Length: 287
Image 1 (tube, one colour):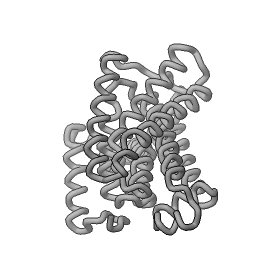
Image 2 (cartoon, helix red, strand yellow):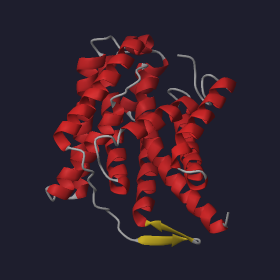
Image 3 (cartoon, rainbow, N blue to C red):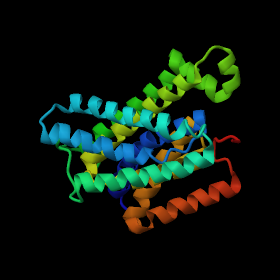
Image 4 (spheres, one colour):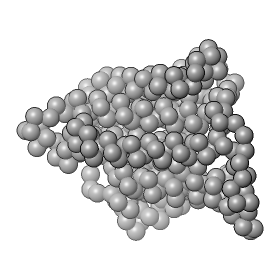
């Protein structure tokens, strides 16, 4: 393997790992605070990508206006799921798991009927190619990586230093104590779904610009997200970041050397090995 090829693999793995990380952060945020496994998250990625496509490519709306609108659509859909799917079940982990799978299939099937099977493409926001070392990389991928890093840092700052973020951390640590301190837990849950939906929307838009948009596009990122969250530890933000980058690099190496068909097999093998050694994941805690 030449140094140029190794650099190309590293850049590709970094970009994909950051996208996986961004989408997985929404999954781990909901589980860490609510103990709910949200299978609808992948469909939020897909719906947001379609929203950005129609708003920007079909209706001519500027991308920087289309993206916030898609984030609103995704956040609103997440709130509907919280209000009408998970809340009536009192956030029971098993029942929410089952109904989430059903809702995911229902949304995906409806998307096939509504959008059709033809893939679409969101126009690249930053066209062109740049050279890094001896490797060539599209400027769109560099832009994608930068957006993911900025949003991950923004999420950290939001959780650490804002009032809603501190309330979310308090509910995660001890819901009963948070309630006694006057924190409205249901409002916190709504905030969690809003933030998670916004992250899914940005992830969907970035994936749509790189690989196109279709009704099945949310399935693979969702599965990758679950692998990442399990490896990093359910509910761990730091674990999700590290595991996302690791899986991105692993996929890039596997797809280049062995073919894309083996990427999921390798990912699951890594997951099984880590869970055998550490059942809670790298940074996880007991549910």
